Image (cartoon, rainbow over all chains, first blue to last red):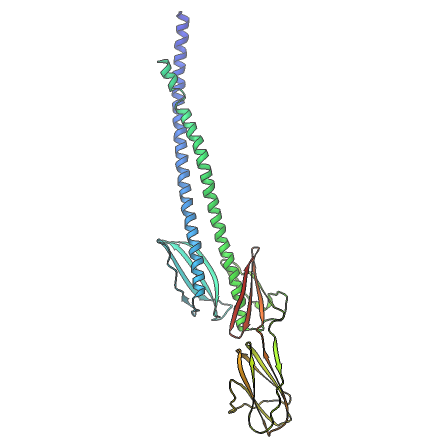
Length: 130
Length: 234
């Protein structure tokens, strides 16, 4: 190998070494970024799934409770109607109050579904003494 | 030495790009799915509020019927008989709620039993197949007329009718069943009698509308109670 060739080879090897380091750094950064984004997406998704699950449970619980309260004998306002048994961790209340424009034969039923201290859903309906 | 370096080159970058690609392929649909589910559950929540608001409108109409079984004779939907309605329910304006009379319902029968002459209370039995108002029209030249609606033929304590012949007396809020109209004229005199009683409960359609959805219910009404016949959600 001539002197000139040896010089060129050394130059290329120096260049290769530099490109490899940058590749590693960029690759590592991309990998880290991807992992962080992936985990963040999983976390967000997990929260979303839990929220959806809570909503679905709350909606069904509120619907069940309202239908149950409407099937029970009429109680004079203010009153609380018996409740269905909620799933573990959930709570449900069913209260009856008078309606200003009505009389004692019609009442507002308010069903509230909660989980812990969080109120998930409140639904209102009327009930008539008939 | 040179091939080892060549091997190092591109190991991490393709791996990172692959992870990035897999993440994009897997995570995007996952997040989209979560997002769609969240939106769907929110829409379901709104639908529940709408549904029970509409039901509240129907209940309001039923309550008005329990107070006034003859709330309207119009066969076209109208809001006026049900107003004033509550201002809101489920955090939104009260649904548009209307009512109409169902043509051909709420009939009545009229009988003209033979006049019973002679002294003392006279009994005129009949059977009403529906709840409502019983009306008697008594035509007689007698100076004093007494009459009452009873469940049996008993003549004690009959109230005097005011006015003059023909005497019209109404007995509102009677349940379906067998009755006896007891009539006494003083002094005993001639006369004629017609009795009108309900033979079919009036029926009404109650329509409640909100956010493009409608509940239509049909109910029969009598004093103090209503019976729901049908219920449709559109």
